[in-house]
Amino acid sequence: MWTCEFYLFIGLILVMTSALDSELFSKPTLTVEPSASVWEMDSVSLSCQSESKVTGTRLTYRFYRENNTVSQETLENVFRINVAFKDNSGSYWCEVGSEEKRTEKKRSDPVQVTVRENPKATLTIRNDSKNVYIGDTVTLDCSIEGSFTDWKYLWYKRNLTNWGNWIKDGTGNAYTFQSATLSKSGEYWCSAYRDVPPPRPLKLGGYDSPRRSQGSNVVTLTVKAMNVTLEPSPSRSVKLGDPLNLTCIWRRNQSSDSRLTFSFLQNNMTVEHSRESSVLSITGVEKRHGGSYMCAAESPGGGKSYSEAIEIEVQEFPLTIVLVSVGLALFLLLLLLLLFVCHRTRGKWTTQILISHRGALFGL
Image (cartoon, rainbow, N blue to C red; front, top):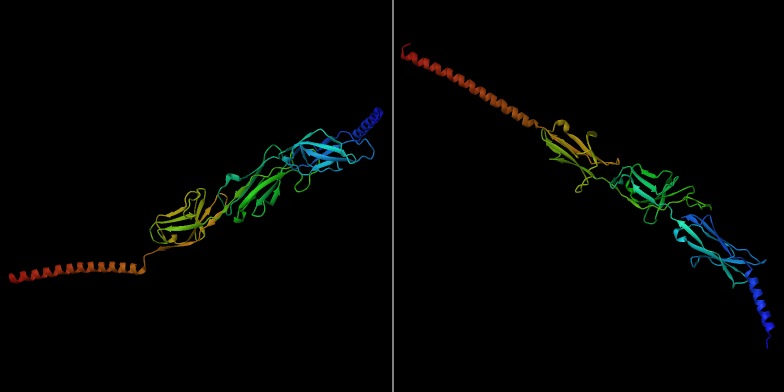
């Protein structure tokens, strides 16, 4: 039968063993570098510090966010978030154990890590151009919210196989096409960075301001071709003195853009330039009005499209008609002259006959 001294001895051994175990390592402390408050895309390192009390004790570490494990148990006391996002925000803590004594675990106090959203970027088409035509000058503006400065800008164009191909970077927040073509049509977006351009890794260090912006909204740019035609009224062949209207038509059967400027050319020389009227009116056609005509429609962005040339023929009176008219006039004049002479001659004959009759009656 066991004695009381035996139970006391066993209890003392258990207490001493527990005391030795509790002194294997200290309660851990969790620290965050560069700061517990960082910006999106920054790097974050969480260090779990615990002091080993027994020489040769190998400590193990595990990291948690809220109540979820974010790392496997490891001998490394650092947990790194290379690229932080808002979803990485939360309450973090670490747990330390002994590789030899896996029964005992010690937890650190929680540390709140906050990942702030980077400033928003907004992409717009300057002057809110809804109608962009071939040859236009088009400018895209990228603005970053907040008062932060020294941004450098990245421009992207989407296609069917890639969310965004990098096309340009620069210090200015504007991207300009000097002469738009159909190939410039597409979806564009922008972003901005400061100091370190992607995809280079960020160095650790505290930042009071963001080093990246968010990606902007997507803007669709549609470059249109202007189909211009020139129509004469009443026809391409007109008579001297008749009226003639030449109408420059853009996209027939559709409403035209009131901001377009129209010009008319005769034999490749500009004869009319108007910001209002698309009609060239000639009240009375002269011989000099004949020739090759075309018109041009110019958009506010500077793009200009020309119609195909048409030939205007001015009809003069044919020579045969002129000759017949002159001959008829001469004939009529000659006929009148003959009638007049005939009339005069007939009057003289009548007078001679009367005188003759009188002489015969009176014996003269």
